[in-house]
Length: 85
Length: 466
Image 1 (tube, rainbow over the protein chains, first blue to last red):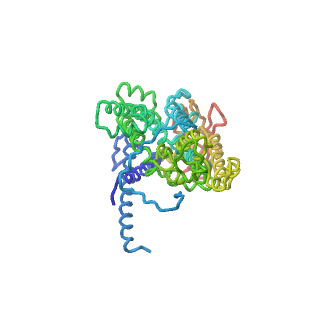
Image 2: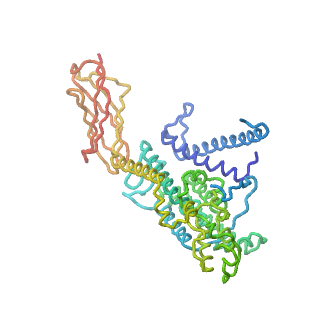
Image 3: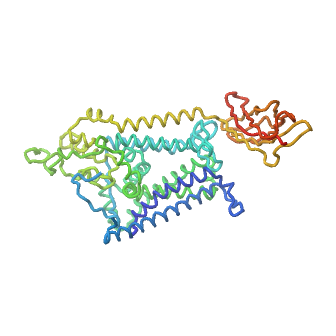
């Protein structure tokens, strides 16, 4: 699977929207100031948590999308020789 | 959406696309787009500065976890309202798309609007299509540096202002302005201003139509809203073909030619670089630049306008006029979309009007379940969290009922600041032996002193020990 700019764009933008949605849902339900990680309050500000959360989600969704693309291309390549019916 | 001929076209996704040099265009639809640029951006850049009730009219205050939209204050608990607003917006978009095609894409989408602004600047510095192609091919010179540099200077400026405004919707914009002027913005604000500025610069300056063609999910799925009666930008093939060049004085019928003079201007102005004469294509964002430019050519040739025009697939096939198109607009799909949209809008409006400006949360004190006080009473302690969503300070009176002779010993009056929460420890007591041991249902009624209609009743239990 070759990844060119258009492919990366198609991966990044829907993932961006998905990350914004996931971040909004998570932090609507949970106030970052009440989060306790491994028994310790991390002491990060709300904007910091929102930002880190957003980019965290973005990375995860991008990783999943890229994996799907790669697997899909691989499967399509295989089914060319042995059609999956 | 397929090609007119129905042939399969191989679209390479693996090679970098040719840069598109869209020629600038004047005309009715271009004017409409310029108007929409000013209209949408006056709202975007201006609304952040609008004062309301002594604060910013529209502010999604992420730091305080409160959203202000004119008279309304939304708390995280109100997330359903915001979800509802998003659903209504999406449905309105579907409704409009089913009738008029991609008018959102062509006139109101931020991608189109910022591209339009950036291309206007590009035009000012580098000239129109021909000049830009020449400039890009020429070696670096002082002239090229000045033209490219000037363009990027203004692009970056607009990008930064856009980023600043964007962040100004999430943190009070006046405070943000002072911080920017004194170079003391917080790390996250700084990051988001630059991130959004960079995205604007990249999207409107470089990616442009690539976003619509390769990245936008809406561009792909909006075709499900389309049918044969949806308004689209169309080329009247029956009238235009066979295409070919000719003198203005020539009689096309004698030359066996259609109205299309094959000037290729419709291709040159297209921001996505397609040829509309090949039929409806998914790349078409419905911007109508080709309509405008073709109309000018038709005028020059003294042919009737509208060789490329807004029409529907059915209208083109059956040679309907505008009146016939309008009568066919009212079809089951539109009626269903409209009814659902009205239901949603009605539901949203009703729930916003009926929304109580008071929310109450009752929590039993876990440390003291029940105790005997002064030898005569059984006392239970509750924690009442009161959310005053109104933008005025209020006092709330707490009363209790459900048990005979139940009274509130302390904490029965709660003061709350505007748009904030207040907590009170409320002690309820009843005379010993008034009721049997066990748990009894009681109701707290919390009522505003200013407005008796503002009240909330919450259920909880009162424990009487054995």
